[in-house]
Length: 307
Image 1 (tube, rainbow, N blue to C red):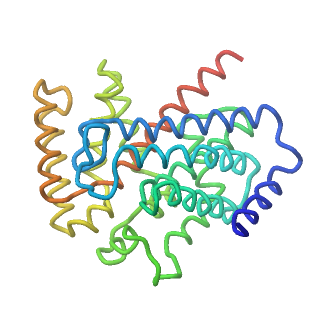
Image 2: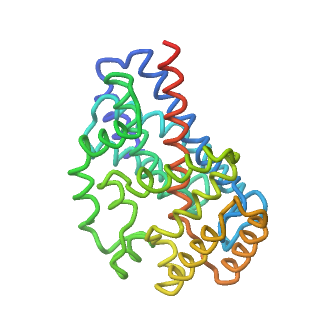
Image 3: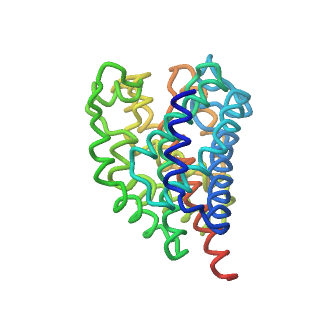
């Protein structure tokens, strides 16, 4: 209770003077898009080894209902961190908002970590989106990434090397053991896997007149083929991530979802990941973040054009 009260006090301080109705509206829209993007990641199928509405993938401790409870618990977090970003809040305030959100998530899921990585990645992107819209109302992929780096890049770089090595998450333990980069390093660099890799692939698939669903599948496999997913390191070590990257690249080399047999291939991948207990949760977080950026660019460009 004291921690939550502290976060509330800090949030109030960065919103003083009172946020304008326009800023509050923008923050609410950002929050809606963040939750919608997390839902899009959940319902996407097939995602090798991951939870969906079809099955629990490689997980015995979580299911789609657990993810939905987590999503519901995070809806106000994205609004609050967007408002904090719009006010130019320092990183420690954003971090405390994220910690409080993680506590609410764990309470909703009864201790299961469903969205820790997404709380960080989508939280930082929500803050950057709030910042962009509060300044000149212009949001592009370039301005969004620039806002993230310019406002919080230096502190994110320091944050990528935590001082407390005694209580690391599974992802951070894997990153340390295998010298792999994770979400913290990604954020410090302005999420290159999103802006230089996943978003262009998503947009390419859409330009090729594939549905958003198919474009998201291509995007997910692209992420899995390239990023250092600390969840895979944790579950499968070097062999596990090598297998995942190779499998994803083969799917893409066969044409991705442009291949008429793509669903059969992807479902076979899903079954193999389950048999190996592999779960590319880092790729899932980056997929949700990519969907968020995509939806933000669409939403706020349209709003700008109608002003």
